[in-house]
Image (tube, rainbow, N blue to C red; front, side, top):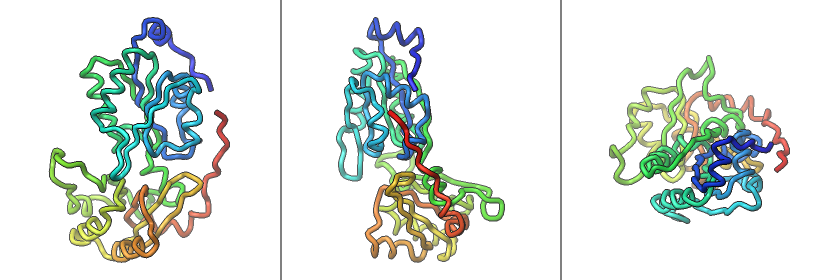
Amino acid sequence: MNLTLTENTQVNRRTCLGKVYLVGAGPGDPGLLTLKGKGLLECADVVVYDALVSPQILAMINPQAEKIDAGKRMGRHSLLQEETTQLLIEKAQTEAIVVRLKGGDPFVFGRGGEEMEDLVNAGVPVEVVPGVTSGIAAPAYAGIPLTHRAYSSSVTFVTGHESAGKYRPAVNWQAIAQGSETIVIYMGVHNLPYITEQLQTAGLSPETPVALVRWGTRPEQEELIGTLDTIVAQVEATGFGAPAIAIIGAVVNMHQILSGCRPHRLRVEG
């Protein structure tokens, strides 16, 4: 698909007044990238991308575009957050279409809100293009429905890796344990011993089912199934690591029934 440039964007190309698009790349499967996101990649002048964006999606980028790796992984930062935002501001001064390509959805634990706020404050035109978040897609590809009339009518999404100096000192695991039937934890593998302890202290049974889904929606996706009482030992025994989503709750039991119905990965032409 080729994105048809709007009249405003065509004017921007002539006057070099750029716009930044915060594009959600989805969880990895290129078939889950939105048509709007794909179109922007195909006509972008600059793409600043995150570490978890899949190679198949990076291959869709306009061959003439400047590509900049701003990926952040545990303990390894290509660019500091402030440097990334400043880079976007600078590129918007000279390029018409600047794409900030973020894994999953920009506004779901993706710092998209922070980046968009900084761009607005700097007077840079900016637009968000939502993406499929891994907290929904990874469980689905593992055969785990986040809601099910027999098991769960509520879902909570929470980060397992909090930043220093944030607006409050810690996630309220007590409230989460008591307030939701399904808990989806992003970036929680490294803190899993603490998280499982907190949830059990808050009243969840040690037998509560837990699933970890690594590299969700990609060909290399794998799952580890256990309980709050066993999952930490299973991780240590298998070497199961990030990046992974954790799903906690009775819906995990559906994995043994539905996991064979994996979505087919369609070939997406660049």
